[in-house]
Length: 100
Image 1 (cartoon, rainbow, N blue to C red):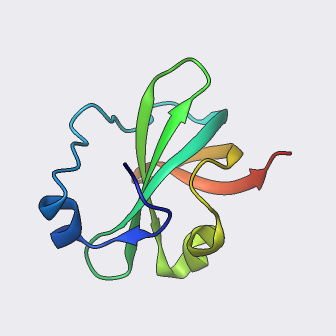
Image 2: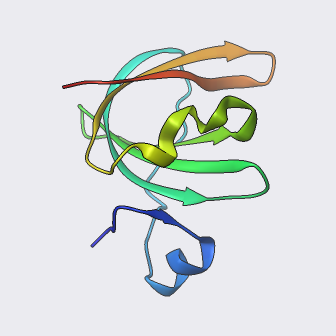
């Protein structure tokens, strides 16, 4: 069972949390999703795992310069609107809105 916390890489390994079925978003736009899990990554990055309304699973990084888009304070299971935009490096999560 996934706890409502930010996992370290070591904790994910210890608990054998499998994330191989999560994919990166490849198109900009708005998506409705549920936050499944949050995990630390390399310096200044947080990995977010979501399930879209169509059942697809996605992984998205957010960064310190984005102030992590507030995800340290968003609980697992929260329904969200995710807004992705394109820049010179690819597709990134620009904004998030909590849905009721």
